[in-house]
Length: 277
Ligand code: HPA
Image 1 (cartoon, rainbow, N blue to C red):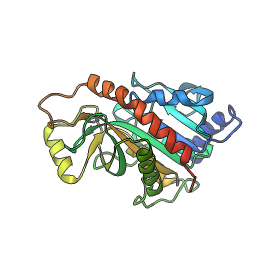
Image 2 (image 1 turned 135 degrees about the vertical axis):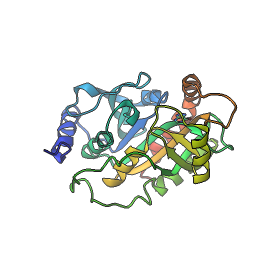
Image 3 (image 1 turned 90 degrees about the vertical axis):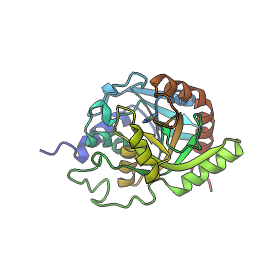
């Protein structure tokens, strides 16, 4: 029997909709150490992942396991405080669940943030990079399996997955806030080990600017069901081999916390301006 049916996701969405009296239009999935961005959401309805039928449970300590619904800068939002990664042991198909549930809640735009290592030697920790595109050469697609036509077509275009209008808006907002912003390619690695020196050299040759273990499964799922995507990498460390020192979880978390204020400001502005033209 097919597990991932339209009704499977609808069961999660119906539960969430029964707890709120609005439909969120913007979905937020915040990476490690960036969870505090959700503090700005007003009129919060907080739902534990474990209470949502068919949802997943986060296993990473630094990620909270809650869905926060409410209002942010005039927009109705749903925010995942804590996301799911392949390295936790989920199958790729399971990683499609949150975005498909977002879709059934009414979300039309998602903002995905991540902590990432800088492959590009011109970047430094604390930099924010708009994801223009990604490279995923390992692992399966999150939308493999029997297609669900109510969500999207079997084969689908991903050439505008990281929507240009959202990237342009983010550049404008960064400029008005005097925040230096990069734009580049995010290279997906399954983890949980950080990369080898040779892997980073190869990723640089292939065109990667940042590397990380999240975001792409969500972006692909969003592209399938017609949700616009903005992806942002927060550079928390130089990737393996750029500096003559090992990468530590502590530096990743610290840099994430230090730059989260800047990212919070930027995201607030972007969310306020989404849909304005
Ligand atoms: N590699 C992979 N994922 C990461 C890194 C890294 O260097 N830094 C933060 N997340």
